[in-house]
Length: 463
Image (cartoon, rainbow, N blue to C red; front, side, top):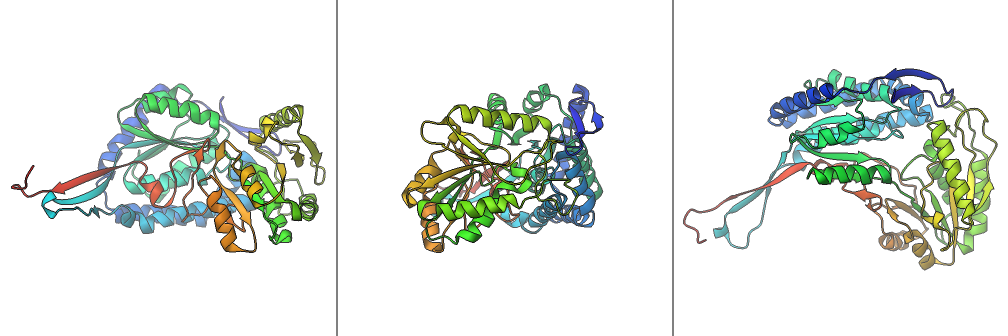
């Protein structure tokens, strides 16, 4: 069975689920379209009521949902609870702001005789959401909250190791009162992606995943002439300038690299440290990593979770081995991790010069790339020497300087004096090999709507 719950910590396969049949996929499409035809005319107030209801359920049952996330992908239980609360905040954001974000816009015209031009934002149909395993609920909610609020329907193809989280997402919306068919979890098989995207009732696809998955899905969507948003990989730079608070920067670097066991697209993967503070920063960083405790993700004292699967561990190990063959130097840092289960020993990687192609790779786990920068300009150069362009951080005591450096970093997001953390009221997205399109706030809710011009012109106006 492709869809299975395997506890990463114990390795136990707890449940398996069969792939959806072609008939089930077609039935889901039909039900979604029928529900959409009514939902698109439903008031924003009614949509907001359901979004708020979903948020209230998540807050009430936070432990239940968090337990499922930890069970299926292995993240720390406390991290899982924070993810559930963030998901509730996203529902609440769109309940409050969706109508304002999508209100008609009166357009200025050079000559009143040209008419009274208004831009309206109308839903388009069914959105296919293809989501990854590292955030079982947040990744789904950041699509369904805006798209359902906009009047669209959503079909979900979640990661194959999260079948129970995927089912829980559907149950959540049903309990919140969402009309049947508007949101459906499908244990879709690989051929179903093309089947869904080629259906005329489907308006597009939102993917969060690997660069390789993005190439495939974007190609399929392009052939079907369907809109796509791609939230792909990242190798975020974490720049520490010579005037930074080194102690606090090192503390944030440890957390920024190792939360969710380093399996985050906006993790602080590349530490770029000014020469003047490099040695002190490195000393503090190693000390901080050494204080991490790997173990049972349900244990409150655990601060380093296992990877999501043995396959993830094996892939990361192979990647590190290949980087070393290109000349990378690898140092073991931190306390030893358990030998049983997909725990990965934190590593520090250097020697990633312009001759080592591994500097352009994303390491999805607790592997830290470390660079020594001569000065500010060199730090920016290293940061921009990447095929990715998702996020980044700049640490400095001078906020104006931080803003100037942030403006020079070619990414979709930059935080100053803090690791990048997703929020309900901030946009999310990148450029280059990190994908295209934006999620959350007004940018996200407008990705799959028709921006229709309605222009009322005097019948006697000249042509």
